[in-house]
Length: 210
Image (tube, rainbow, N blue to C red; front, side, top):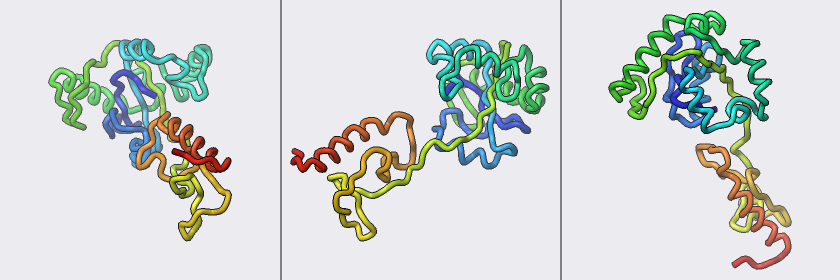
């Protein structure tokens, strides 16, 4: 999920624990040090409006995409999504520490003014946070994929324990080890899936490539 300049906080201290510009694969390890193993993404009305100008509501929150009615129902339920007029109301309903969050918002807004993020060194914060209603979403990790897989050679033949091709065994796409390296970015495997599948298919049919 991406909100326009959200504050990313833990529950009890209500303090930022990682830069909001960090990639999704690097956020998850930090959650192990959070008391509830989760984090909360917070923005105000202006940030919410800016975000929805770029991203559809269903794509922003739901996986798979939720219709507006589902999102509204989740806000009313107040278990993982909250919409409140004031910070005090938001903290009361969500269990987030109010004093800590207010202090964090003050630090954030000063960083916007000075272009000096004393917590994580950001210099690109553009908008202060201060106009309700406030929107907050509880975020928890979930298993998306494995970055393991089988080894292959340039012909997409699967290699055995001895690093020699296994007869008539080919692999393509994300079943191949090392596709993403140390970081996964959504959509970046599509090109490899097409090209590796084509290479494997050509070799299966005995056609010469190049």
